Amino acid sequence: MLAPVSEADAGERALVQLGMESARRWSAFAGELLDATGIDVGLREHGTLVVARDADEAAALEREVELRERMGLETRRLLASQARALEPALVPSLRAAAEIPGDRCADPRALCGALALAAERAGVVLRPGHEVARIVVEGGRATGALLADGSTVRAADVVVAAGAWSDLLPGLPDAARVPVRPVKGQTLRLRDPAHDPALPLLERVVRYEGGYLVPRGDGRYVLGATVEERGFDTAMTALGVYELLRDASELVPGVLELEIEESLAGLRPGTPDNAPVLGRSTVLPGLVWATGHHRNGVLLAPITGDLLAGVLAGDGDIPAAFDPQRFSEVHA
Amino acid sequence: MSADVLTIGGQDFSSRLLLGTGGFPRMETLAEAIAASGTEMVTVALRRIDVQARHSLTDVLHDCGVRILPNTAGCFTARDAVLTAQLAREAFETDWVKLEVIGDERTLLPDAPELLAAAERLVADGFIVLPYTTDDPVLARRLEDVGCAAVMPLGSPIGSGMGIRNPYNIALIVESAGVPVVLDAGVGTTSDAALAMELGCDAVLCASAISRAQDPVAMARAIRAGVEGGRLAHGAGRIPRRLYAEASSPMDGVAQALPADRPA
Image: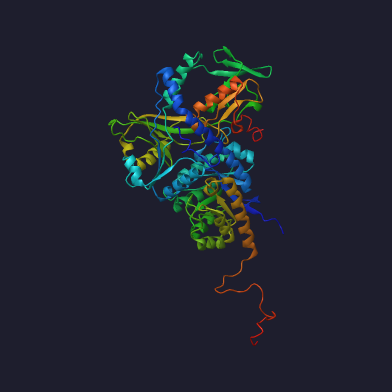
């Protein structure tokens, strides 16, 4: 999802700004990838509905709308009937809704494929499936990566973009590490066997307390997601699946007619303040971080690329809110 | 004045505010809220977390230096609660457990018979049991009778922020309890916590009111002040409620200043 407004939190203003800026770059980013690779990354401009199923949720939604108004983020209150006119599959007992027209979605799998291909075409050598045994540190400087097959890749700068595993990479001195942890999310990928392109179950992303439904536009839907502090566990659980389907079906009853194509538990790279870790390590020269994107990896892809390109070319600044050393006092 | 110490299960606490750790928007905010609240003991839902995970909940709590009180959140039967408490004992190396046995998913109200059965078994197994209970004075008494180290009546349902719906029952529980009474669940803001303490509760447990506030750290500070204020007020002896006003300065012997043209 490309949802800087839905995800906004009053305590994370720098992150909201980064997300908004990245969202502005997304259309051009998708266009560039299409030109370079011919791959459509599934950017959908239909916007997002946030819906409330009862009075309690309506009150909570109103508080969220007011917060976004104070932050200057575009959000529109809708009557339940207005929301259902936009998305007739919403449950008739719907209590309230808000529309966030600027929050969109894209297909993360298509995006990864397109980025890999575009990189290769630009001359990047990818080594897929090669585990990094350790970061090579010589003379107080990161100089490359030793792969599990014994070969070494040397580099002037080593960018660590290892997601939830970023803190596990061997070879780094403790002082250079960043406190990234895995935050588990269970999701289901659903498919509508009766999909009618003219009359899909949902057009827009629908969000609610406990989850979201993202339409891919071709009859496939992503139903997410739990948020669990369970280390590197990626088991799908009965409770997780039950809660995902219960909440989704209470708001979009038609979800129960879909087929389950896939269940997937992934690990978000979380940091203590939920913001990414971007830029040069001041502890270990040659080491550059691009990790900790938590729930916003796809949204923040274009801005991360632009900021890191600036850093590597030596002419870019990164806001202090994302500095790799910002946790060092807490985790000394 | 001697230090106002709270003793539960033989352990002394100078803070009378317990914190739940669920629902915080950021790990960093959890740590800051713990510091701001002054709490010495926090609850953790064992079923929901991996105790060993680096940079996750356990690490953050250890860094904060607070005592961990595992709870059995998510358990619907005495069997599950006992099992979870035993797992928690191994995972956290503590005999203490906040016992929750939920009877209804929508209200998350305690299931009284299952709660009592689980409490009895856990006490027999050597646990220091702090049961989350309804505000029923008889049930609270029975929990104490089976050997619980404290009773934790609800003010209103978990996460509802509805405050103390039946102060009369809480006062009855306090009056008859021989173990500490910790008001658990329902606190929405500072005044709720202050009221609990004014009613004579020994401590307050607060989770959503802090973790889901727009500024959790400021709310932690506020509720701490409420608990401290309520505790002081309880000890200070409030005035009786009166139907009519009573001037705070005595009227007797005050010089009469009357207009000159009116006879005295």
